[in-house]
Length: 72
Image (cartoon, rainbow, N blue to C red; front, side, top):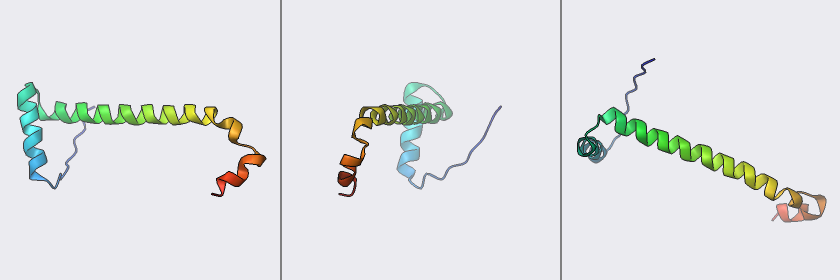
């Protein structure tokens, strides 16, 4: 499935950098954007996984005795 989007980057310098990066790497602008988005969302998923892991690490602090610290 092909999907098109139009984005106004509101910064001509970004467009120039995007075109230069694509030319330098010898790939299409679409691939530069796709690689950037893939990296961004991969980082987001990794961050979510780390936060979930951290919840279990600090689960022992989730008790009534420590509830006063939550108010600080």
